[in-house]
Length: 166
Ligand SMILES: [Fe+2]
Ligand SMILES: [Fe+2]
Image 1 (cartoon, rainbow, N blue to C red):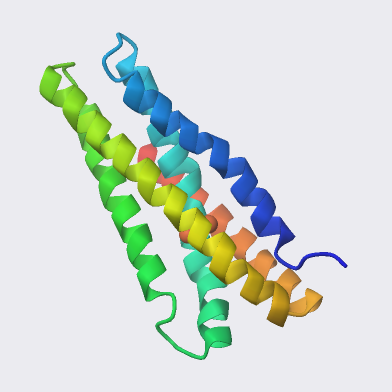
Image 2: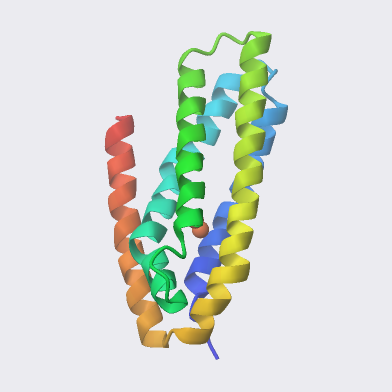
């Protein structure tokens, strides 16, 4: 039998290796190409990860709230997303004023390792707690409708992110 949440599992599989970009940027922060490493990390965060989080908040978390029978069941996960957004903004500001000083390197490593650790745990919580619940309780039809709504929200969020960066 097909797994209802397979599309989200696939998307996470695609995002996961990108977390290594954060680790690479952190370990390479002292190299001459630090600005490029930071640009790549920010591109992943602002262009892919944050739109993914916004799509979850629009289309996936409300379904989890309903299935758990508690309107605020996903509040702690939304709070993780807020923190990812905050750290990403700090990283973008650091990139804007980057001079390659030891203080810049320390800041970059703090932010990149912090983001990576937060995201690894956040992905694990979604996969280990939410997805089994959805697989158990959603019909294939409900799953398709949920992912169509998520796709639409992600496309809108990506367009908005591009407009912001332009
Ligand atoms: Fe999430
Ligand atoms: Fe996710």
